[in-house]
Picture 1 (cartoon, rainbow, N blue to C red):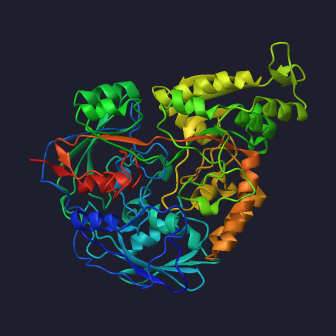
Picture 2: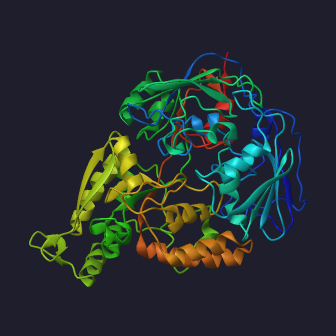
Picture 3: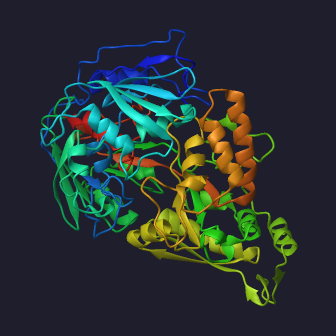
Length: 578
């Protein structure tokens, strides 16, 4: 985590994308855990006058076609506060103050912010914003907008005590308790929105479709329909007009259709699973795999918050966890392209220092059938004549859904159905549309879902604990999650919540490790999300007509087309080849 020692100031370079991004990332090396501290010199600086969108290559009006990551009909919304927001809005239209690159471990890239500084005890964060920025409607971007972004009624963090401007470029956030560990959430995950638009809405902000979004980013929205939406380069972008003039996001009904369009040159950029990526490379496409995000079984786990189904029993979740053959899933559903998941939700190899020695660092890779059955029997379940466990004559039976057309997840779900049956647990796998999936998990209307957890952008699992396991980040089943909340499992554990606050309030590594050890003991026992693998995050791109893509040698941004924040950085860096 990027945590500063007392009074340490950081002035981060606002260099051009063509020079700055490449240099910033080229100078970083991947970390295997630990705080991403600066050098002994407490201040770094660089020219902050250059833009951040002068991408590689030459200007081109050839339309870049991107898979929207969703089926048709597309949800027609660019509202950054709703889960169904279209991807280009987050990074392409709306920007955060800084971009934290989850594919690397270097300093954050300045966007609408130029520098920030924590005070000695972590109760104040002073932010210097970029001068001369305008919203795409011509209004000036000011400290009033920054304050509104942090304090509006839609998604204001409850731990911010106050936000005030001390001059035209300085905003001070104050907290009642130290908030060092929330740096990423504050600076990298808070979208800057225009006060003059959002404060004057005549409708519920969460129902506002925002079809013509007013942002500061490198692109503006030109059109949207059930089938696609288009963006055009913002000529007044603070970093200079991007070289890539036109981009179109299209809805596609599944991975295979997207793969076919890729092979025939009808799509230029996707983040999706392809079981034989070598064939795509042979067709001339660029390819990179950056495993980062856990693939899990979401469980609606909390009966006290209205979840219904056998998965609300922790014994059932524990048994199912042991019944899964992750090695077979890796080989058969993901053709060996995935990584090993940790039940602690730390990223193995990067976050190892945060993993408690008192819990298993890895989820079991082979099924442990006898142990799974012993857990069920100890909890009062008995096997019927067909070998399926239940109570009072009612067999355990759970539905497992995945999104129609997501072939890797669909195959994994089918394997889990078969593997669970071997242990006497009845799971029925089926597919649903993207919209059904999104609505079900947001409202808690599910039993098991094959889905993903968003990995952290820094080498520290704190954000997952806070956003996915924190009791403040959920609602009762039947009530949609609030904007910015991700605890789909409806998990609520007072011990976990207390230790999340301890970790958020400290700069001391030993204190954080102790807090994480307690959190990990609770979540590895309760398993509200059952880890499966670290997902193969594959990205394919047209390297014939466009240049400036992230590569293994220059991972200046997390590369998939659906990446929140990162997609805007990538688009800004692209240009034509001729």
